[in-house]
Length: 119
Image (cartoon, rainbow, N blue to C red; front, side, top):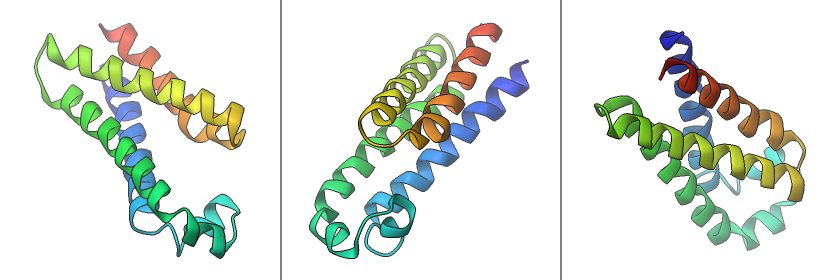
């Protein structure tokens, strides 16, 4: 079960690394296709997307620290990071797109549950 918890957590990390790159560097080129927005909207919201990407980067850092540090810090960082992703995914699904529920919230909830079971 520990391996499954780690694999699920790494999956969440990889999803969020992609989101960071997308929002901070590829917003105007890939953003319109991924999010179904116009190129004009992507241009006008570039700074907002970059800021949002930075916050996703902080979640990545928390999760990486959770996997890299020893106890008791590992558990604190893992549950904080995964909990934030679940809540942000639920909010995003409610306010922006239901797809966020499956892309962000579900993998994080599964990783959270798996981490809970091994601790």
